[in-house]
Each structure stands twice: as structure tokens, then as C-alpha cells.
Amino acid sequence: MQRSSWRSPMLAAATVGALIGVARAEPAAMSTPVEIAARLPVPLGNVTITPDGRTVVSHHPMFETAARVSEVTSPTTLKPFPNEAWNTPRSGAEDYLDGVLGLRSDSEGTVWMLDMGTRTGITPKLVAWDTRQDRLARIIPLSEPATRRNSEPNDFVIDEPNQRIYITDEGVGRGGDGSAAALIVVDLKAGRARRVLEGHASTRPEDVPITVDGRILVKRLKDGNSAPMRSGADGVTLDHRSEWLYYGPLNGGAVYRLRVADLLDERLDPGELGRRVERYADRPNAGGIAIDRDDNLYLTEIENRAIGIIPAKDRRYRRFATHPDMLWPDGFGAGADGWIYVTVTQLALAATLNGGKDGSAPPFLLARFKPLADGKVGQ
Image 1 (tube, helix red, strand yellow):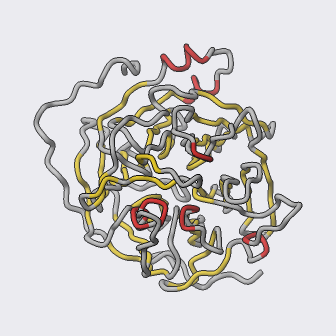
Image 2: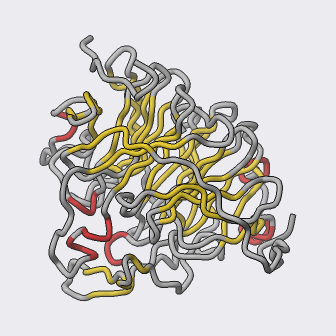
């Protein structure tokens, strides 16, 4: 099997109705350097790093790039991942990558890719590719009722101890407004998925505009109409003990969390499960979420070219790292080299959010920063 020679640099308790108390004083910002690891020719989406250091990126479906997923082969080059055939749609078939944003690597080097299915209208699915054997490992369809007509499965985490995958569904596919956003729980042993917390306060977007460089973002719909950009459940992460799942909508002022034990308890009715969700901390509008081994949360502050942090010791959001070229940081991926990598998408300049004109331009950056403690490789 031929592999890329490039490796990542340095490696070739309240309910929802009750707020966590926070002090009025603004916590002091931190100052952590951001480095540029790669300057790439195609718009990015999310990133994952395999245990042996291979870097795989998705290309945000909003840009409708030819390749859906790529491997970074050098600091300036890409090749289709897992191959060109899987990045090529075919009529009468669904075993190809249609529109991928979320992707993660497990501890065995299997890269899982979350296919929204929204570009050509196929069934959403999870595709697992074994990078060690260079072969397809598994496909798990995400059919109704786990997904809905307006589903847009966005991001996910792998819970290896419990053999589950937890997916955020923004609820904005095919003109959806996010009001039916939800979480999807995939049982890897049984190969089945179920939908939970649909329309819950923790998954649906708040009516908070996204403003980038002084411009409120408006989304152009395929029917020619426009609407303020509002997206539901987006970023998601899982602590290293598989005890708490953290998540939140793209538009909104909070990170929420839920005990994994409650999420897996299928005896809980929707109302009871919803009552067990906790509002964990305040935050600005944010996309990706990552966590380190000390339970510090990192968030991509999409409006301000910044990475934020919510330290576990006080749960108070503050600015952690900034870079002037980090226009819409989005997905995180922790590497075995001790860095957390973050994609810079320029999403605010995509035609859909920029009055019909694509204002994005290469290079598209893959940045990295040092967290306070190690993250979980691949997640």
C-alpha cells in the first residue's frame, strides 16, 4: 500500500433551566501562539490525524469542491482520500462520498467520515476506511427516523469503550431552520441509529446573528430566497473517560453537556432525557469543540479569528489563541505530537453566505496550537 510521506509537523450541575453561576468580571484572555502547518489549494472543512500521523481533511460541502475528502501529502498538496473513485458520484449507487464535513480517526487508524448526502440527495451515512489495510471497513446508513428530510449531520465523536458514535444534526438541510436539530446515537455493534433531543433547547439554534468582519451572515437558499444563518447542534466532543458528552448549536450562547450513561439509557423518555441535559458554560457563537485530558474545552470562535477556552477549573470562557489569517476556524483534530490542529475554512466568503459570489481564495490554512494538556489523537 502506498502512503503519503508527509506527516503532521513534529511527527514524520444544573438542568437546562438553571444557569451555571459565572462572575460578572470578564476573565483574562490567554496568549497562545498559533502556527500555520499547511497552506492548501482547496477549501477545507474538518481535520483528523491518525495514530501514525496521517492528516485527512474534509472539504466543506458549502464550497461544492470536486474532492469531498483528501489526505494532506505535503504542507501545500492534497490527494483524494481514500481514493478518487470514492470522491466521484455515480448514478444508481450510493457507495461514494457525497458531502462530508465531520470526520474522525479511531485508535486503530480507521477514519470515519460522516456523509451528509445533501449534494446529490442520497441517504446520509457513516463510511469507515481502514488506513492500515487501505480498504473499506464499514458503511452505516443513517436512514429515517434517525435522520429527517431537513437533516444535516455535521460532526461526531467516537466512543470506543461503549462502541457508539454521537452525531450532531444541525437540522438545516434542504431549507431547514434548525428547529428540529438533534443528536444521533449510533450503536456500532448493532449497526443501528436513533434520534434524540430533537428540538431541545440544547440542540436548536438561538436567534443570535453570526457577524464576521462587521457583516451579518445571510444564507442564500436553493429556491432563491435568503434567511439569516441559523444552525443547530454543531460542535461535539467527549471527555477521555467517556463520561460526559459536550455539544452546542452553532448559533447560541452556551455549551451543554449530558452524561453518556443517560444518553445510552433507552428507558428514558424524551422529556426525562432532556431534563438531564446541563447548561455547562457560557460562550459566544462557536463551531468546533475539542477537549484535553484535563477536561479543558477549546472552541473555534468563528466570528473573531480566534480559539476560545473554557477551563474546567472555573468554566469561564476566555480567548485562548488568535491569528489574523484564521478566518472562520472550524474543525479540531488532535495529533500524537501534542498539537491540536484546526482548519481555517473562510466559510463566510462562500457564495452561499456572500451574496452569491465565492470570495474565498487560496491558500486555505491548516493551523495548530498547543493545548494546556494533551488531546485525544484523532478526535
